Image (tube, rainbow, N blue to C red):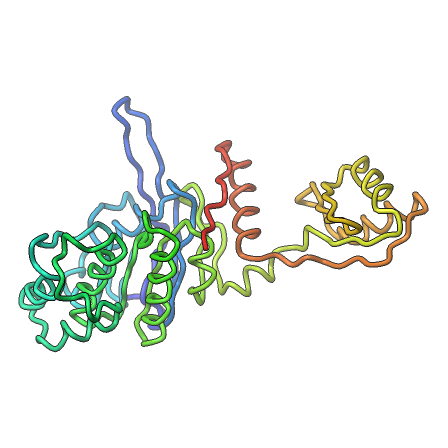
Length: 327
């Protein structure tokens, strides 16, 4: 049994290795310790190929772990997975719906299969915002509507834990916004949602807490505010009388400088350096350029993510990911 009853997902030393056809060993998940507390939306954030889907598949018994321990809702899995699956909903792969049946009829068939009452169908339709469209044939649904119906199918059994793997893949900005809003509402109802995603805006706008992984390893975990607050200030807004001269001095001192009118944005290039503001002030002062304003530009989740994954790529020798933040 898990040592912490508040955790709905817990992994310890979770590892997954593959062998390529040429016999090369690939580590997809590398000793991952993941802890998700009950309630709200927890973002599972990482670049494509970072091990998110592999982790989700191991939790759900769709892939076998090489080593490590896993618990869902306090029960060890995969050993006790059959006893907890009635309390877990998951959208990992697109469910198979009958194209010629309406959304409601598809859900009604699934409800009978899982032993859910008929009232659960209407409740699920309402929760995902498909009222008025539930009588239309599934084959006429947009991709966003199909994804909503997939989530509705998982809600038929009133799950305590909902696991969503990249639920907005392939959707247009409007579809992304609709799914994001729906996930936020679900988190507010008391369902714990694990949202696996590589889209920064999706995570920052709906998640209460987040775990960031890269190359299968844990990079950071905590609330969004905690992660942003832990990130050192690496960028300052600078205002001086002669911005051109200041930009020249700072550039020669190996700061990254961009100019917007009279204001400069100055970024440190040494990730191990501290007191960036003092460095900027001292560099300008010895060149007889004096500050009118020096203002720290605090990090957001995107800057934290990019810094963590960039640093991790330097350690691993793999290319750093680009930002895929979307509206």
